Image (cartoon, rainbow, N blue to C red):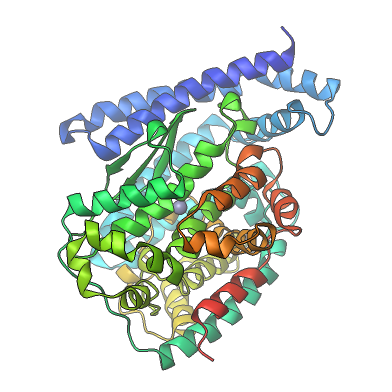
Length: 492
Ligand code: ZN
């Protein structure tokens, strides 16, 4: 068997282990009884270490070298697979086992300390742990290696090819436009109706299912379950599941959660099934994945035409919604108001939360910000961006779990998702004749087919910025999102 075939077989085996872990994780989040948690952790760590050993074994390095020597045509299936296997192999083998263990131990303690500190709204309890996490993250960046900024090495784990020097000017352009827009909206717009009512879970489920089906989600290859933290997961080539949570007084939480996760699920359902378990059958990056969820949730779902089309069906499923006409519902779901918590932010202010975190993370990793100064820096910059004063660390610098996990470099992928979504929609509207009419009619197939063709079917064949350039004519930029938000929310 030639070395490439050996790699394919090896990584299909690794994928059997990883997708089995994914089922166990999905079960843990949805149905696992409380007493079963500890044994589940043993099962997961066993499978993770098996997968790690199989994918980092020395023969994998030998097969990769042999493939690289042989060389493959740039447009072959082999070339991108070998490229990503090599990339992942290097990342996984550059960190000594002792370092990985220390990182995991530190993060586990940091997570517990973070929970307590957040509860008590007291940053001091988390500070020494975060100092260790930052120190180890800097070491990690050094071990990975980088050209310009150590932060580039950390981002590369989540968004291949992303760099501080590429993102900085784009994010600066976005920031100044958003600050102006938020200020204009906050000063001139009355609050939207919160749309509170009596919406039993079973009624919400019926409507959500109708919408997910309309968007193109295949229930023969997926299902919806309930969790505290909604997510989408791929458990096999024909098993892409999504989850949501419910509030019986506010239908929007589950509906927009479902539209978001359906976007992730549609991407996974559109990846080449025959390549499952290899890079060509995997999503391009987190920033591309998030573009799919934000596109369906916000560009499609939070639009006036969506509610003009679906209001009657929604009232049929959720009778209490009859008290709000389509115009009121639209104003309600398009409500913009500066708030403290990122995960509850509206579509306009959301990226400001990310830009704040990006600047702070880069400062921490480049050694320009000290951990002990974080609360003061956070509160000062937050007030400048949002025009409101942070009352305590719980709703300020301590609100997210990411830093306690050591997941530095992750946050920017959320904003990349938003930028990519706007850029893709802009291009889709010029590529697809009558797109607005089909969306207004609740006909989503043309848009989904376009995304399948431009994004989904390629898997990881191209790096994120190349994929965007091929789909839209240019790598990720800020201007399409700025134009979109100004048009939708600008009051001139
Ligand atoms: Zn998402």
